[in-house]
Length: 439
Ligand code: TRP
Image 1 (tube, rainbow, N blue to C red):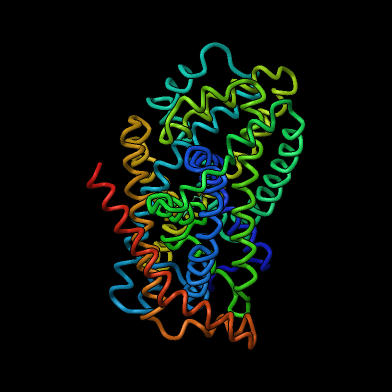
Image 2: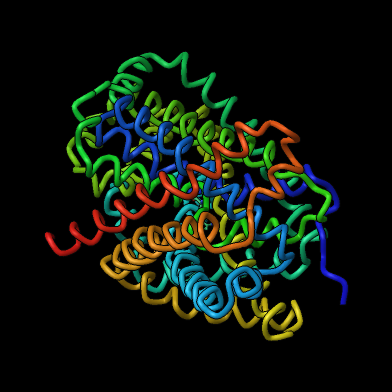
């Protein structure tokens, strides 16, 4: 059977940006920045995106496009049996991330419906705790998984590309609109100050560099073959370098803008203390409490802003769960010759069942996040740099085709992949292990 393809290069980019832009940008980035060094963290993060995010992303795109198949088959063809093992490890990672991510996406889905139904009353902390875990959380997680399956079922062109071509631009427009609106709120500057207060001492803290690297992997969907899989549906004449740059810049822009929307809203309504009172680990959960509370206080405008804001979150989350599911579905299609229909249903049901665990227990959720969302990705990123930099057949071919004879860029990238990226990603793995054993 002929392999599916994107209908255009732009469709691929929109889908890839959709994969990258997700709850990681909207919640995790702003919460981390606000609680660790503000503008200092943003600076470290940007450096990490340029130094390892973008090069690694290019590495994944090259693997996908060259071998035109999903991770297991592509990595096997690149380096043989160890590649196959790494590919299956990616599938495992995808399952775990998909399962817990869908639970969080389920919360946002519920908040979105509630915002349409008229908002919230009573204590929002209690509300969050009540819906975050338990049968209701599982129900919304399953609903979200079903939405994801619906798009993946329709395939690359007819499902993923079509949906992302709509959702990704809408999400951008909403964020820009909200950012402009929020800038005029009284107290906006306090919000910016909280978000971006430059604490430059973080530049000297290795743990912050580790955290920034972890955030880079998660936010850019790197380290488990998601963008490799998307690139495998490119035609072999498609170029890669500009695409990688556009994906990286868009992903950062959305993360940065989300903070510019969230903190002015929260601070203009005096919810700042609620956020500041919680530590770094809790900051993400607190956003689920402080933002709806702010929307409530804003009355009619708040209703509108709340609906639109949660719509943006839901779209962002959905294009991300789609890419996670596609990694597994695509592997079953390529490596086990299952039909897309059966693969999608099977994967959706399995991930739905695995998600019952994080749906019933917050500690389980954060454990899965730590293992798969941080450590597995960190290890995956390290393995990919070694594979691309040292073991596969000259990866510069694709890049030369894209960049022509700009040898400096091609060789610069290759140097980073061989020497710098393995060192940094390796350091990050060690750093993560140390932290686990320390605490
Ligand atoms: N990048 C998404 C976010 O920021 C999450 C995500 C989607 C992801 N696909 C992935 C993370 C693959 C790691 C790997 O929310």
